[in-house]
Length: 346
Image (cartoon, rainbow, N blue to C red; front, side, top):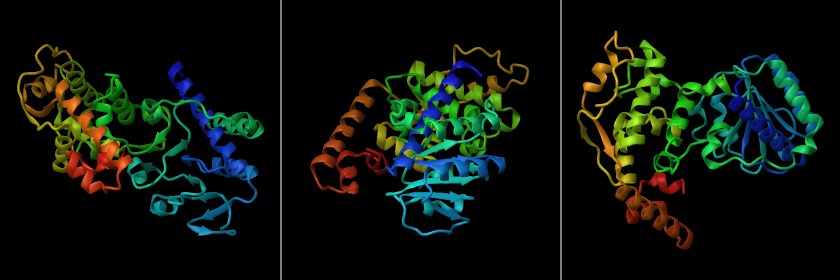
């Protein structure tokens, strides 16, 4: 286990410990806790640990209440994606327990962020049980939540985010770190919940490369990220991938995505030619894949400083309208020329 993964796991344990401390105190958490494992034998152990913290916890098994619905804390046993509507209880603490493989799209319409506890490629079942046992025995030491920056939330929570915030982040590596982690490295943290990569790249120039070699797809996406970082050229294919991953809407229509970015950035896509000059052909040269890939023209957005400044200005106007008026989302969208989804996320 490398140092960064170890640190992430330590912070996750503290977040889960703090969540369960509030659970014990019947204080409402801002997140849902999802306990997700491939192996069902862990459920009984962890469920017992959770219920020890609140003997009055309402248990919902296979969608049915098995005790009186009157408490602050809920535990959904055998949770499946079909029960998403059950997680819309705002004034309760909810633990959702599942051994089914879940995808990020299953959480798209849930009102709260989802904090995940599950096994991964660096933690054994025994380590997970030991962690939970330690939290239970020392629950009062988790009174304070660990600090997690906005840019690092994706490491711990499943929640839709505004893709434009990653594009305009002052941290030029923020977009790269987010996408590469979500698409290729998430199993280092949780191995039972995944982005369906094939669906995410559907109807983009990346389509087909994943079947050849996932490392090849990672490399091609990396090349587009280099264009963005060094030349502020944001390819349309990368824009589609980012939108689907960030919003959890993996089936989003590419035309609608294009309109979203044009509205949000005040920049229309255009054709680019020969912008890959300077890249070497050493990667997969024997197959000629990248050599052919880089010869092709492509559509993308040229994100100059002026465009981003104008966008920031319209964001500030929208925030002021939300704060100081009773105007609805549609009206604010018309005034600021921002996408409705951008305004809803402010």
